[in-house]
Image (cartoon, rainbow, N blue to C red; front, side, top):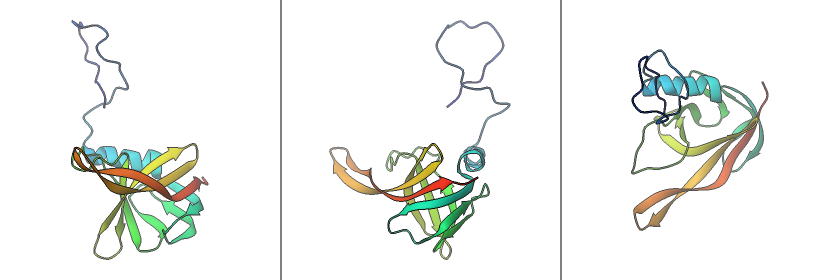
Length: 142
């Protein structure tokens, strides 16, 4: 979320905090590309893996390609708000054949990236995703 500063006299003071000024409107794809380049891209040393079959090093590039994880070749970041699927920090890996997606929740902490599995839980509001155990933890090497 951002607020673009507009030149002129403000009639309402202190209503918004300015996060950053951008030259135009970011589309969802622009946002995904920016996150891929500035947040995800890198080489990761695997320090923990659960059921994910992967090499000891995983490479995530800024063009949504991922190498080192068996059966998966691309990744993506969910930037849409889907009230029916409220998984925090949702990302996905796509299968090499068929393009089937497997969804995860991600978290960055310092140099480490963690993918979490999730379970669908029944609540008063219906089924919602609940983050469960870590699936993968990698430390950025570059």
